[in-house]
Length: 124
Image (cartoon, rainbow, N blue to C red; front, side, top):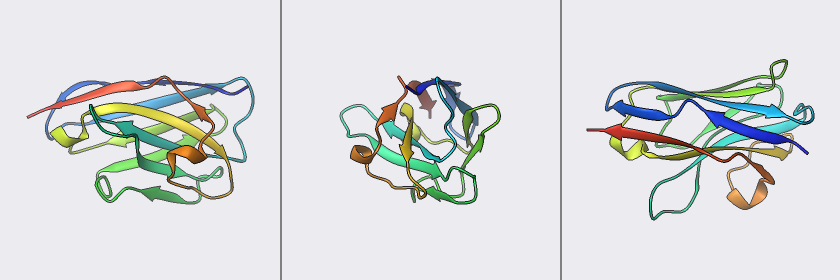
């Protein structure tokens, strides 16, 4: 059973940066695509960014394209999300998730392993 633990969330002013981490344990996550999702208060969980098992392909939501960068270190079993130029609209709980897939998909229902989430709050 793969376990995921997110960290790195916090309170930041608009225009600032944060880096989220997702540490995996329990078994190797090679061959698993990994993604970040977020859920704002009163809204559904939405895809933010994803990366293939080898890091060769990434995919971003339009709202974060050019501001966020996803990466992974399979040796350290860590998924990262560098978030720059943060906006109040980025305020949400951020979750990492895995999917046994060669490609990144964006549907929440497709992912079968989730972390507990980390809160990101961006003040104006």
